[in-house]
Length: 225
Image 1 (cartoon, rainbow, N blue to C red):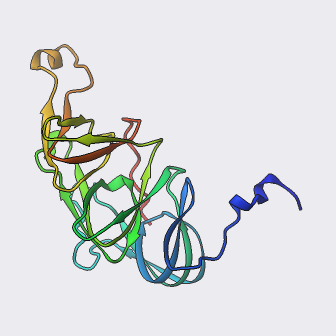
Image 2 (image 1 turned 30 degrees about the vertical axis):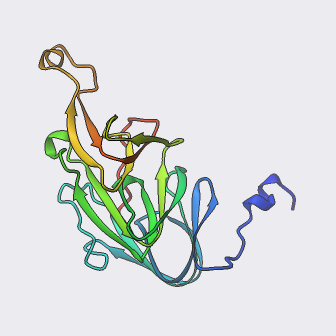
């Protein structure tokens, strides 16, 4: 049988070492040797002896589900084998975190991560319910994190002299240590007249970076298995 679909770049190869790698731009491959974590419903294929267990209440005592439903439903994957993860053909990226690093990621943009990473879901400081109740997933420790993004991400440096303002529907994540607050860029009079569609943004101050996606459309919530 012959077809371009069988091109070498499309063929899955056996992993040579445990852990996370990019299968291609739209999927992550994880060679499991013990356990790892992934968003529920994101597994697209696996081989080997693997078990998938829903984790709706905790990951090592560090996972807290937001009461608004904006949390990240997770599953733990245990055993020996290989699994592939993806989410609606979004672009996939791998982030390597070292001790001392911190990264806050919008829950909708988390795909999978090493069990060695510490994880906590928190309401973004300064935003609160009035800003849409933006919840972020804060990662720290040593390990790898798989992140998804609709479209090509934009990474914007943040400096003490130049804060950055981002739409809460477009933000993917930001570096640890940044101060967040709610910014109002629309006057009350403008709101009365119908508004500009850009009433409030997330303001980031300090030294670091913020990642945004090229879309403000609200992404659908993750599948509940």
